[in-house]
Amino acid sequence: MTVQEPAAHPRFAQALEDLGLASGLLPRIRRFPEATRTAAEAAAAIGCELSQICKSLIFAADGVPVLVLMDGASRVDVELVRRELGAGKVTRAKADQVREVTGYAIGGVPPFGHRTRTRVLADRSLLDHDTVWAAAGTPYTVFPMDPKTLIAHAGGSVVDVRELSE
Image (cartoon, rainbow, N blue to C red; front, side, top):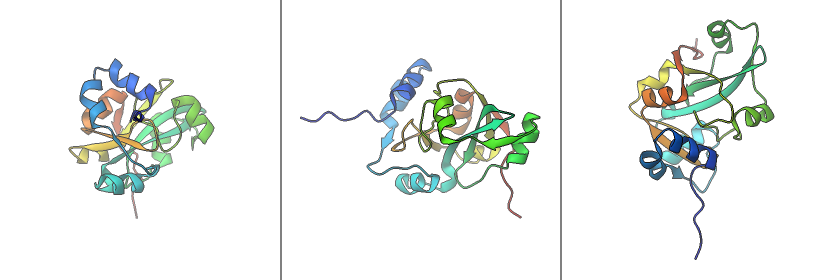
């Protein structure tokens, strides 16, 4: 008999438990045999629109970590993030910084359940959907949630930080 590996990362599963969401979300977490590290890989595996993927991206604003939640079809405009935060400089966090701040590897960072609390900015584009899919703590797992609920559990502020195409 084989033991099935739990779908969600243990820290994320505990966060769901702490938020009272475990019974509703743990059974809905989907695990894929191939990694879904990118938004495109996740959308293809799920069978949803790219914009229905919620990316959890860590930036450093004047050296302080900040989480930006962005739809999978868009890019973050770092200048808009800088202005939103009133920061002097905003850069993308390196892989080791992401793991240190969140407790997760890039490609599996969920929108909440991190090792440390950070400020959270959620791009308004996420609200264009009834359901979005986000990482459940590993590059192989995702979960669905209504974006307003997801943003609320992440402690996010809804902002406009999406890069606009010219």
